[in-house]
Length: 146
Length: 151
Image 1 (spheres, one colour):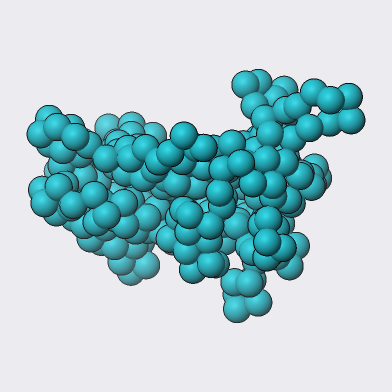
Image 2: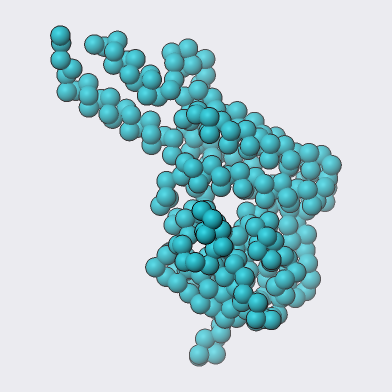
């Protein structure tokens, strides 16, 4: 009976015994969002765009090598977060979950390449693509009233 | 054949529910997390600032009341690339011009440092009316979002 119960639980959680010993899952999906993905996305979003007033238009784009490099770092984190999301035991890991996670990696790469090229417009577009990637996943997996 | 003890069934159900809950991702920006679908607003005011940024553009307007004082409102719009598809770019809304915005006020109604609302549609100074909201965030299906028809 105990063996049957363990098998059922493992099937439900989509985790096998070797997965549990191979990885240290310090955060659940929510923790990944809160501590890694959202802060890194905020760096990409906050360093592209414009503030427009009657006095004129101010670009938010980086102006120094250090600022561009900071964006590269955070874009790289977005890219690799996709892998964190599909680690066994963390998310549902079905076909759709994996597809959406990979889409996130692609959009992160757009931001990374834009930062490497110091391309202000491409960085702004990449920020939009990252958000669309977030939204696509949230539309599928989000709790409606949160 | 041995029967399954009720405690095992309860344990299994509890574990299953915990697993499901762990899959659910809290949005940093679901409509219902920040805005009140029961507080529709219609605001008319002068544009003082536009933040053309991801993930949401923001339009700041100064709304005068009957007493002669004014209140700053921050209106959240869709992501810039969706606004562009709706016909709004960063130069469409000129600071200093009057606009009308319909939307829903934030749940936090303290209005400090500014009142906030989620914009649904905007009427520009030339009379043109455009959708300025976000699709897929859980905002009320009020007919303003052209994408709703296709969903």
